[in-house]
Length: 241
Image 1 (cartoon, helix red, strand yellow):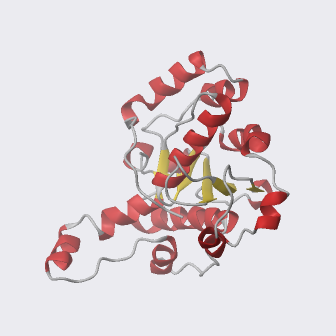
Image 2 (cartoon, one colour):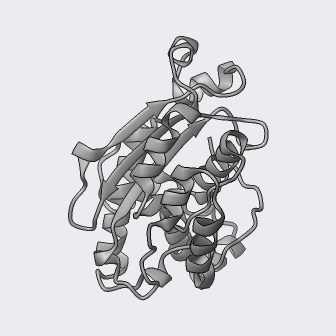
Image 3 (cartoon, rainbow, N blue to C red):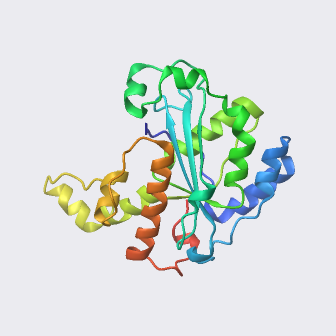
């Protein structure tokens, strides 16, 4: 489930400073190791950046009141998706599931009953993200939900730069003069949801709302966006947030 809430921003010019400071201050060993991994320079061509697609399914829209129920991670580059290194976890949320969330992500009470807490897989998750640039489709879920969940368990949060494939689509279909003219004419906005975005690039339709499948779909979408709208030499600073 996706939702929007304002968050404190770290600009691309000071992500490196943020990571360096957190590597020094972090008390938790896994977080210290995560932040000690160097970030690529903002001028690095995207073709040289190790990437990892991340998707989460949650019980609702607000990280203050809802929880993570599943996480999918798929490492990739512009040339290759590393399915052999994929990771998928179902985790137990802090509050019971309701029928609306079950209908949305199809994770049931019985699956949750047998699932670990996020704490039990957190080191493995951080290791899967460490040293890679995270790619998501709509950054206002994965980053705030993970930050909140880690704070609850480790007493300190985790923030990191991302490439948001939804934001890249918004640049083309929501923020141009033509998009504004369409709105002035009363035309409906172009959808920038994951399925619709993939369809514009001729990518196959996948079953949505499964964290691992959506992570794979996001990785493929970024590859298509770079191939059609950018170049392998596009600097990271033009894409991340």
